[in-house]
Length: 106
Image (cartoon, rainbow, N blue to C red):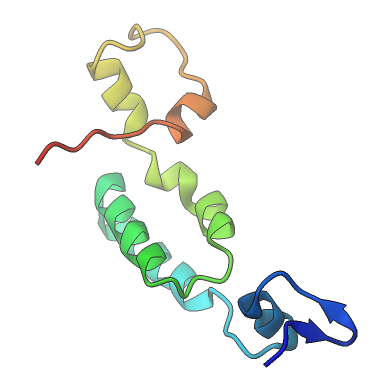
């Protein structure tokens, strides 16, 4: 198998297959997240997104993140205020919300 299609060389076999239409798009993952977001908290949906990404069958993970990041992070502003990173009346920049990393202790 080659990474070339129509005289164009692609960086990966996966990208070549996507261009050729041999791989499915992320439609099923979008539906899954849309349904979960209606019923679950942002944290539960974070875990779901992590599981989806671990399957390594997501064609464009950055597009899933862009589409769902507002809902996935809807509880982060509250958490940042609770942890006193920001004062109650202080507006939290979106970048701080979307880049927030949760520490999980085991």
